[in-house]
Image (cartoon, rainbow, N blue to C red; front, side):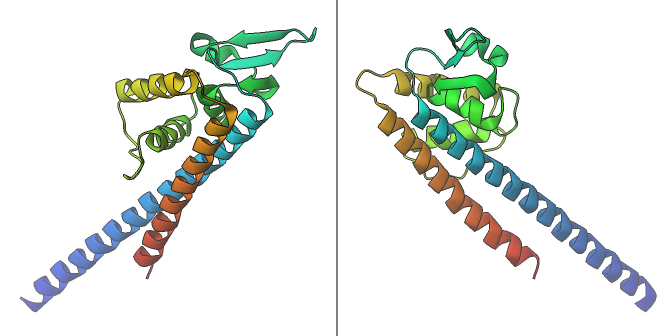
Length: 179
């Protein structure tokens, strides 16, 4: 019985260690996404500071110096490195590096949370429908009459602060797992 008990105890320890290492992997991945999200929000704030738009997502100059604009339906075709002005959501797209970036959803969510009072942790697996609602609400918030660039940059700065608070908390959780 002692040998069997020792084997079961060893298996239990191995399972517990595997679960602990999996938790460390998840926490490390979360920290990486939070760092990239913070950077995307910071870049978005820089974009808005250079030039802000309402009623369209992006403006850029073509090779002939003409200003072109595009809305949400053409977001995937915009040369992001040439954007001279953007609305809130357009700036988030630029900051994240494109519409297919995995950082775009958490950046949108952190910003949306700022409009709606924040509080809860970022949810990573929102459905595409929920994410689309957030984008529409942020677009409407941006385009509201009386809105100005300073309010948009303040919202983005607030989102950066919230993500950095969450990042500090996640870092503390990771430290606790590694002890």
